[in-house]
Length: 153
Image 1 (spheres, rainbow, N blue to C red):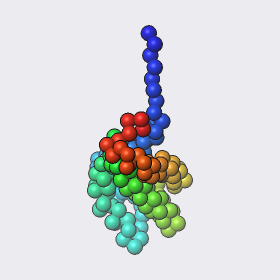
Image 2: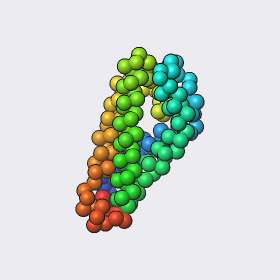
Image 3: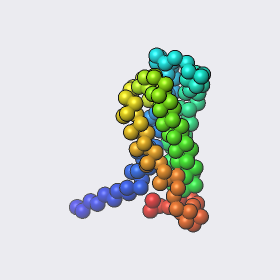
Image 4: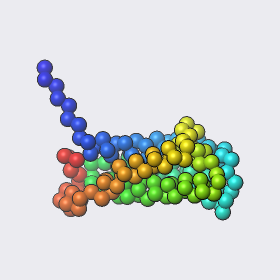
């Protein structure tokens, strides 16, 4: 019996950030208080805003992660652009925490489950951003020629 498995690397590349977003969103929903358990001083009120937004951000991350797996190219592109904006904001937020002398390992990005050093967290966000950007800027021909999705992608 000849069994052949075809791996679409573009689907794998979409699945990695999508899975990370779905997992981070679910963990925020399960443990929204994890941000409050950190030892950060409330600098300029930003930490309080992030604490209050955690459950909503969790829902948004689940939706965006799911949408990045969609067959419809337009949905993937919009979701990836929003995910890219969240990752860029997250990188800025982590850098701000670190530069203001706070321990960013308790940021709550992955609930209470995963605590990363600032360096590892910035690398993770950078890798996810690098995987999201090609989805966010898929060729315009894909979007205009086949709005329902490209089965080869």
